[in-house]
Image (cartoon, helix red, strand yellow):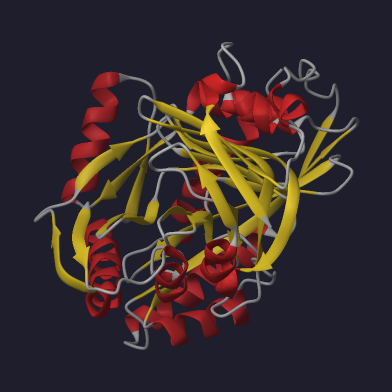
Length: 396
């Protein structure tokens, strides 16, 4: 393969919206106004071979930071096979810079052309649990008992629901709604997997590595005083502090073999998104040289205790035994890697997996279970988390 990268202004003076580049069938990974979008598929490659394949591409570039990229998702189950795709045309926005990378002379004009306006939401919907609520409540109780007995420190129990529509669902419209409500989250779309994750799993930028684990959740009501009270209760909650500390310690320990140093905030802060508030701790360090690629670090970290539990193997065994469904891409990671090994990956939460005909989508939400967890409270937390994608899919 051969790639050419040029400034966006070499192709158009018109403003380009990355959501519109992705449309219904393209790819997207963006936070705020920075990120990438692509059209067409130049190649699909195994995730663990991505950095090597990208380095082998002959690249003609007049843009300092440009490099061929691949985008995709890594499933929840450790070591699962996964593919990334190399878009035929990729539009990248990073700060004040914007450029286009084209593989083998693909159609730039078509990729940058304004897409049709997305269709309104379907007039009729149904929402049904994939796993019965009673089974979920029993799974939470089983996880809590495992923690109380000392077999686990934490386990994350999730449940899926199915949204079905009378007409095909426009992913383009969903992406626009997510941008309006969750602009500070990592919004993504790849192969029917769409979402807005607030959690940075890992970012590699040269020798710098960053992570922003989240664990511990409370609702957001929209009332300033009430939300401030809930945030204070979240920070004071022993249950949520324990849940958060388990995640931070695990991410720290898994990154240490790859870094020369790693710093983190001494106390978690409250991270607010449209529908919920989380405890979060920012981490930043410097990679040892030669440094690993972003994909290698994704493999080392996935799944984090924020989605699996601790100890990892015992928590995963319990999850498989009690949940009653296959998580697939939920709880894994989604993001991109380039030919230098740089990349940004988010934890795959607040997401939906659409069927090929776009008439249905599976949503999954879960929460961390510790000794003080109550099943009905955990059920309420999943209902709050579902609202992120439900509002984007169903809202007219």
